[in-house]
Length: 434
Image 1 (cartoon, rainbow, N blue to C red):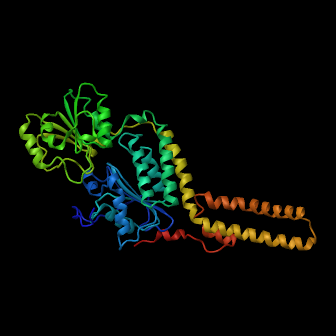
Image 2: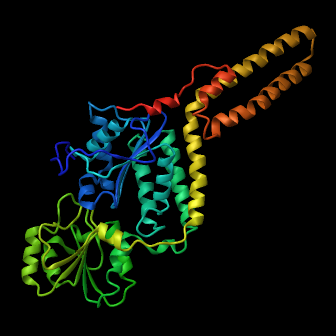
């Protein structure tokens, strides 16, 4: 992935902000930048796409960049319908640069959405649960989030905040899906296979050997009557007589429907190939393209019926009852965001505890001095009483500072009331802008 990729049409684009989000959040705020369906069309998302096998190299590109201070915590989630980067405590322009470097592009497309704080937590929880998917509750995206978490950990880009965020997103996504009726019945692969339901069975060519192609095959096997052939780069990896790419043209001529699901940055079904296929056919061929980037070159599709990822997602969005799932996500997101955000107050909490313990120790020494000789048992009782009183008096303020969602915004007031040192976080800094 070279950083010298050609600029895309449209040049640099301003980002959309969610809920009046400020332009430049500062530590310890969660931030994310997403280019997703339907705001960003597939051809604009394609240059940003990073396959799972390329994630390690993308993180390496970031680590090797001399002109960008890469955030310590950063996760890339790149799927067929979205490309997102989540980080901690960086400004918007830094996040933009990270997206460009990781994907090897010069410009960013229109339609990117910037989130910060609680909105980041809500969003990734809904994504993991499949509530932002074309088929609500689909399982595929949960696995993609899990693998993104693993890749970031291997790259050394997971700190305590993002590790906790993604672990909770995966856990909540799994539990939320159990509350959605028929949540196991759909995915992008299923939508691709569903194109066959209203057609007379014929010959089907499935191009690819990855997860998506295998999922399409599994779904098609449930539809009777179709004569299916697999075409892959490495036919030896797929059982039951798969063919290599050298047979692609001939099989496209024979097929009634072709589903393409290949990971490639260049179109597999090129303008020239499609032209030759068109000349040899006497009927339209349905091309269902679930590749990201697209496997089919779009320059001339006369003689073909074409459905891409966005077509499948737009035309087949299912609606299910998700009230219970959303309620679970709301509660979890509230709790997780409070824990993540309030981790910034740890120095303040430690200072408060040290101050209380120091005061209790001093008062214990004074009391022992006035009491004169005390035996070991009496000394231990007094020490235990001092510790117990300290813990009981600290319980409510420490509980507030560690878990209340407004503790960070009220930390300066808490510091003044409790008489402890410098507040580690200034909420007014969120209002800074370029």
